[in-house]
Length: 285
Image 1 (cartoon, rainbow, N blue to C red):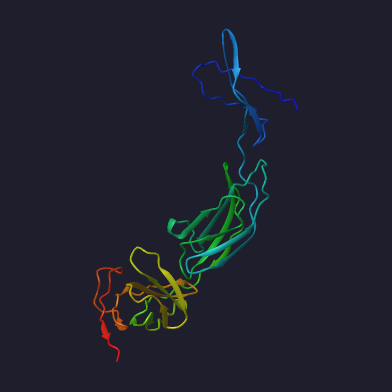
Image 2 (spheres, rainbow, N blue to C red):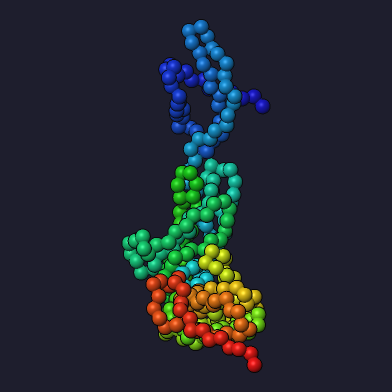
C-alpha cells in the first residue's frame, strides 16, 4: 500500500506542536505521522512513524434493554444491552449509570448517585441509595468526546431499610471447646425489612480478620479453642441488608472447664470498647 504524506513546514526552531486543519477530515480518522528537521542547508532525518487519530464524536445512540432491580435498601443492580463495540468513529469506552430520586425536579448531589463503568460491561450496582425510595435509572455511553444520549428512564424502588435495633441481652457460656451464645430476638419496625437471620462475627483480637457465621435462630454454638480470648458481635439482617450490631463482647480466656457471662449494662466510651462482663467460674462436681 502506497502512503501519500502531506508536508507542512513549521518555521520556528522552538516549536513542539503543530495543528493540522482540514474540514473534510472525518471524526476519528487514522493518520501516520513523522517529524523531521531542516535548516538552510537542507533536510535532516525523520523520526519514527507514529499512528494518531483525529478527534472523535460522542456516542450517537443510547443503550437499550435497560433493567433495574433492588438488591438492598441502599443498592440497585442495573443491566443493559451494550452498543456495538468497535474502533469506529463513535467508539464506546464505557457507560455512565445514574440513579435519581424520581420526585426531584432539579438534580442535587445528595439525591443523585452515578457511576462509570470501563469497557464493554453490561451490568453495574449503584450504591449509597436511600431505603424505601423510588429512583429513575438511566444509562448512557461515553468516550473521549463526551457522553451520548441517555436511555429512557426506568423506575425502581429500593427495599425497606434493615432493622435499626441491635441484638440485646447477649448471654454466653463455655463448655469444653464450645462457646454458646444466646440473645433476644430483634423485632423490625413497621418501616423496616423483616429480620431473616443473624450474623455472628468473631475473632481472636482487634487486629485479626473476623469470621462470620449465619443463623436464623437467636442462639449459636461455636467450636473454638477455649484457651483464647474472643471478640464477638451479632447483627441482624434482612432484605434491606445488615442491621445494627450488638455491643462488642469480649469473652476472656478461661482456665476452668466451664464459664458463663453476659454483656453488662455499663455504658462504654465507644461501640468498639470492651464490654465489662459478669463472670462466674463453675467448678465441676
